[in-house]
Amino acid sequence: MLEPEVETRLWDEQFSVDNASYRAQVAYLFDRSAFYREKLAAAGFSSHRAVGGLGDVGQLPLTDKHELRETCTPDNPIGAHLCARLSEIVRIYSTSGTTGTPSYVPLTAGDLDNWVTASARSYAASGVVAGQRIVSTYNAGPFVAGAALGAFERIGLCHIPVGTGNTERLMRAVELLRPEAVVLTPSYAAYLVEWAAERNVDLRGSSVERVLVAGEPGGGESTFRAKLEAGWDARVTEAMGIGDVGVSLWGECEEQDGMHLGARGFVHAEVIEPESSVVVEAGDGATGELVLTHLQHRAAPLLRFRTGDHVTVRTTPCRCGRTGPRIRCIGRTDDMLIVRGVNVFPSAIREVVGAFAPDISGHILVKPQAPGVKQSPPLPVSVELARGATADDRLAEAIRDQLREILLVQTRVDLVPWGSLPRSEYKSKLVGY
Ligand SMILES: [Zn+2]
Image: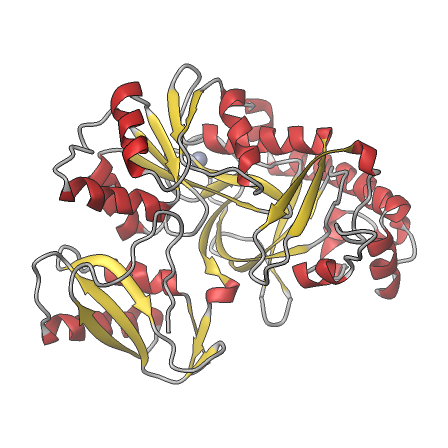
């Protein structure tokens, strides 16, 4: 454990620490944030005293990304939630917006240090320790993932960056520099298993003992994870962050039962029901959209920020000794489809289909027939067969029945030949038209 004092702190104790930080954070926002002064006043909160403590945070309005973006002007391209003077900002990241216009994420020196600390706790939870070597495949560039790279030095690892999109270079680094760990997206980790099999490269015999995955959901799906672990002969754990709030906020420990909050003390987490915005009691098994509040941020702190990540919460004690709540990300709210009133995540479909290995390859593509979220049944799903396997009506039927049984969704399963669905060296698209 990187910081046992923080990571094993009892819930009640953590709550009182966070409550004090939160009150100071809200006072800071009233003092410095044009965006929150206005937003909170409109919701009936005229001062930080009116807002109260962390126990009442659920009464405050939610913040979403579009709202922040709308306040950007030529004079203030970051947005009205910018609180610090530009002279206090030491780094500005961009998030890769789907609209083409980036959102900027500014950080003060203290913010950046807290990001690295949280990220280091999250990655250290996987079991990597000082003195080991880790190969990373992130193209840090303008994106917040760059801040996670600082975590590896903080842990005391020897960091070997090789970047994305050059598999030969990656595999040569693994072969020659013999790292104990690699960090990549789950899609890329899966791609490498196939890449190695096609070239008779002995991935299982490599020095890699731990595969750390992040950047998209998948690393926590049991069948997908089992496939990665078998292909690499290594333990797979996942980490997750959210660009506007922090990088690698969550990291999974060796128990592999969800990601602990590595950003303890820096961020407060809630779960809401996405359509109604009602707070879900964060007990064991709670499911909903993750909402995050900064507790000691300076450059552009956010209150109740909607992450768009749909998660399940675990609160049972973890054998690793960390007391932080754990989450498993089921998918992005944006990817969710509603089929005759039933919420369906493409990643959940992949998980169910994955249980049919070795008959199938594990690659799927959901093909909605209408634009938008609402779909009429049956929902078409292409399922790729294993190498050499041929389509079999009984298999398609069994997959369809299992999807109906577990996810309550009616599908039409089309079995497609090996190699016909797209592979990714970065993030997979599970939905296509
Ligand atoms: Zn644990």
